[in-house]
Image (cartoon, rainbow, N blue to C red; front, side, top):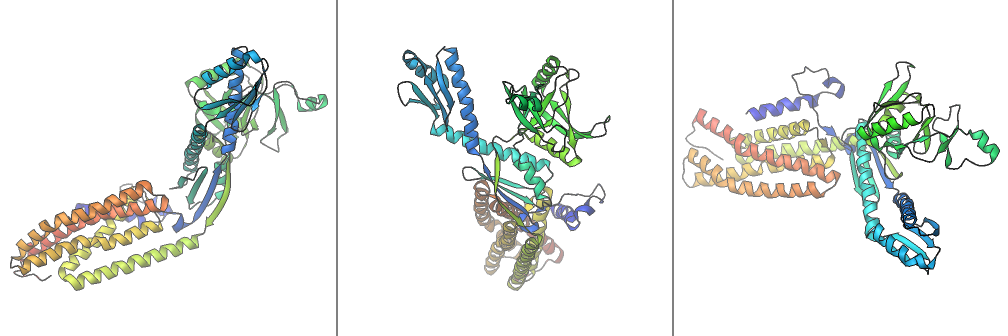
Length: 513
């Protein structure tokens, strides 16, 4: 009975709105189950991971590796560059050809195919297995980064999963500002620190070329005075050393800044950078745009600092979210977007309610007509079975979808299955001439094995659906699993307890089922 009382206790918060729940006393539970995308509306996004960009970046890294190998071996080369899924290089001297082939194969390992088109030219290509590994790694990493970003934005119960070889499905229930979420998801958020070259953009234009070892980048803030910067190519530090970032207000300027923290190695490296480059300008580059270029006025050795800029509270928080979640391994392209309106969710909820109510009433009427008073006992078990399911969903703050409602509707029918088996067994014992108390006792004992076999096999199927299914199927599997366990409890313990209490109180000499 205590479990039944607790189920009522934990179901109660679901009768209050999201705003009302915070006003409840602290001793009351405040957890509620959530509605999925199909019930409350939201956004559905289909994303494509830029696998080609990943392979391009890896190919450029391979070029650097090949250059290093050949230089260390003092082998002269030319025409070194990236080539689709690998690199290409030509050896100048014939006598160095075999040495170069041997060293490249030895140093690069089994993940590359080193082949020659002619006597002096090599193609170093990724193996098919390596291409598949790099692609899968990029998509899996993208899923995790997107999940972190969406979770950090405050979206409840998103569904983010891989689809095919290079696509990701993102479902965001109840999202009121999808453009902000799309902006968070779509940014690569690759953060690097470079020095700003003292050469001005105007001077570079007068000369007609950039200084050696530099490149030009735009300011992330189009309204800023400095529209472009000349940046030195050498990366002083990447965003991988960031451990935390948060939006805060600078007490001196009163403007929003993004405070960041570095790990131990990052703090040491950042301290060295700011010590060696005092009074120089440090460019903080995010996705190939300069978000800030402050002057280093003193060494920063504590591993903490601020990113300044023309931030609003929301933009500062969004940048902090991006930095905390990490950078995407490749650009993300939104190839499909669908908005599910709340009217569809309301229709779905109404249809689910009708199905549940009609099924519930039909089962109750059937049980009363079929088993009389014992049918009422079974109906009481059905009611508490529903309460237990909803209370467990509330405790785990689970998401209820249309397939989940279907699982609950199915559970209503299954909830009486165990009672039917018991009641039919009791009826057989009564017809054989046994006393009411012996018939009830034997009925529960004899039906126990059949009930366990039937429910355990269904539970195994539900677990398999959860492990191998996707979002909607998982929702069905969750509610079905909870329903199976709760129905076994209510049928084997609650109904039996009610029957025994009734027998002790009224002590009937004869029962009719």
